[in-house]
Image (tube, rainbow over all chains, first blue to last red; front, side, top):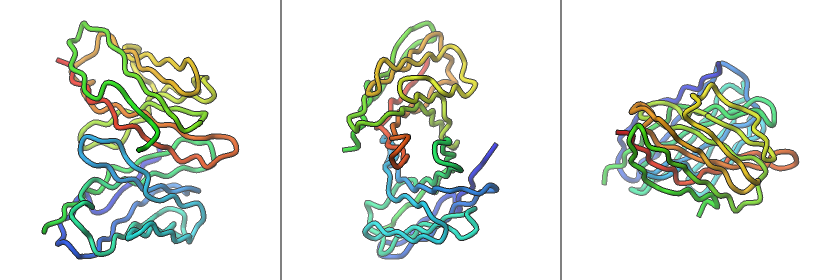
Length: 111
Length: 114
């Protein structure tokens, strides 16, 4: 079945630093979603991407839909302590197909 | 506020108990989902309901039984569970056919099977 890989698995950064993470697939996807999950809570949708090459921002977060349609990237600028959590990517092929989720990138921010 | 609520938030049950998880979405969506989230594993899709009809059952054991009485409510009935079923169970909803199909999640039910 389809699988997504996320890199890195975990990262420790200093407050104020920028963060980059990515998600790759062996299959072509037509939609990418990025979620953040806090401990004990459900994932919260951050950004949705629908077109290859699309670059979308949500505050300090910016996500890109890779032009090969097999990857996506999430950047966080000027990290703050509340950015701590697990970031998941999800992708799907055609509209209406189920989303496949990545294993997540665990982000820790050191003060 | 995500618009998707789940109860209970925590549940401890023995292997012989019967319990139910409840999910309610206030977003006017027409599709609802159950996912299982275990430590260090990607989210596993369990069931999909589209316009109250079950459209997917991802080889889930029969000790898990879903019910969708209307497009706003989804239940997961549990019986004779095993300790390996302990996990975070997440409900999600989305708008299919004419809307963006992003999925919105509830806060989850943390299930522990003793």
